[in-house]
Length: 483
Length: 79
Image (cartoon, rainbow over all chains, first blue to last red; front, side, top):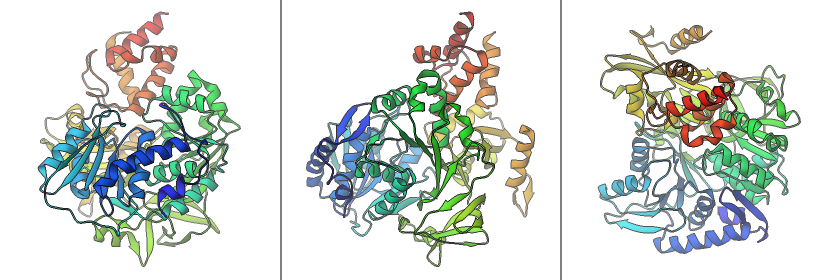
């Protein structure tokens, strides 16, 4: 069954499904939009084709996603935080048959970049562009035909992209049923709820959470931009009572709203934060929200939600409870899982797919300690990934970017704890004749801003262990310096 | 408070090493301050300098440059 039948087909026509800064939209309105996009896409025969979307307006993105999925294309919602290098690298890797993109967003010329990319290729690509996300112009750049891949199905999300091989995570449509059930249960969603989902639609969580709210007949509340004044206004006009986003975004929202319209915070009954390391006493940051329930999910971009925790003001440690239906075990303290919500493969990369699994078990890369049947604490991380502000930053990717700057002799990138972002990206650099502004300027426009180091520390040499940079020592040097 | 004094506090709140800036330095394009950092910077500036946060909202068009932020804080302090 496709997403459209799972999500929109059975809703009452007049039920309020979506509230965004653009207005109020019923299920009927969304179905009309899906029909409009189906008519636009049908002549492109998209079955088995890879369809990339760069559409920041969620009232257009959601129907487009559903229409492309209904027509059996494999949809890849790309992050509009991508800039030149990230975007081109992901386009080269995914090699989509069709790209639907807005002309420009946040000062970056998406359609120009995509069009130039398509022109430079020998294979045929259709680029569909729009100034306003409503009216579309279609251009096909001729070339050899690309292979169809009907077996992929579902959708592909990307976790990194600017250097090396991007990681495309492939999901079948069926993961939605599992993921949706977990989100709806954890957030105790009722049809009367007005749920703000501020999560990137280019992630599994974004895709599942947004579509789940629609499917259940609740009202999905969204914002196309990180504009807190608009977000707060939209919360007010939608009578929003539940919210899900990253801890850092929620903290920023609270900071703003507590000064501008504290009543929107007091109306929230439940906040679900995901995607970053969360301090145990996270709830204590929100004194205006004593009655609100705070929860968090544990999971990954490949597995979706696996476990939940209720965040209390005085908690000293977080103890997650693993959800029913999930098989789990630990090997050398690393958590391994089997669930119906798992990704199928890394796109076009059988090697890293097989490395990610051990005898059919997905390796989470997190070290855990089980404290009881189904309850565990996170004690460390095996993978070299920094979780900053809800985004995943691969240390080696940032190291490669910085290494390409003339004047940088050597670089080591680590994640350090940060009060607001969960973790921050810190680059230790051995360089000649460069300052941090030069380094940031180089990165700007080439890679998404969240990958640009928050701190750049110039050193003369690196501590080594067994011939490799001792990142643990580097971290401890800076942590000691900060205390 | 001089522009220089303000910059020292601003970089401290951004948790960044200080670099040379002028009043027209653009925070997003030249200092790579992203939207989330910008939000946290404005709330932290309001708290640090004890100026009404509403001034940053009312003067949102001026928050793009270091000089703009400086003038908002200076204006708030003189009220």
